[in-house]
Length: 223
Image 1 (cartoon, rainbow, N blue to C red):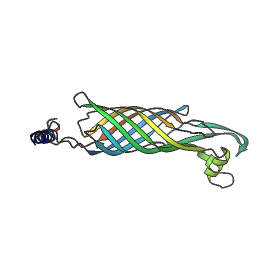
Image 2: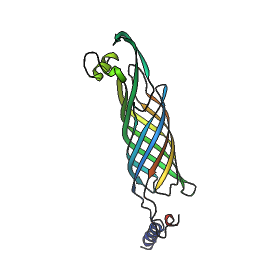
Image 3: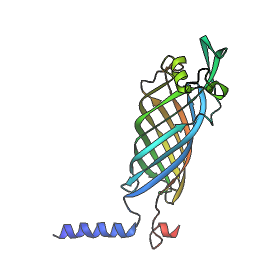
Image 4: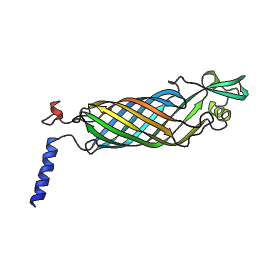
């Protein structure tokens, strides 16, 4: 019984010395710059879930978006049959992804930094669409019907999304923590009329929120 009592005593002492819970919730928000489909774009990203084993493992849900209205890049589409008298249309693109987040992390610099490897596995897609006056279709049909016809039924494509990379977190012992990440984002099997792949690297600046150590005698209370 003596070894068991000793082990329990050590565990209790460790828990008292560090009053941060080993399991807690986290929320992260970020803004990404992408280099995908031969152009630059940007958009929001999010993640939320559970932080386990003193933040050495995170499990949750995550997502990304590339909104068309805030990305001015246009994509020319040459037509054999003119649309409203035009032989070339300028399209825009949008899309996004969501899925399961798995992130392993290690504390650095006495716990003030955290290096992690976030991996998002999910589903998503990207498409191309008419903009401006071109959305006023000549026969009154919905723009999506014309987009489908003009791009031979392949105005968008969806598939399994893999999004992974490295992330560095500053102030990993605080509630609000700035982050910097480099990732690679890909929709597996993507193939649309305009693009046969939608994949590429991204850089993300963000902020995450986790409960900090209590304000008592713990290390966090002295910071």
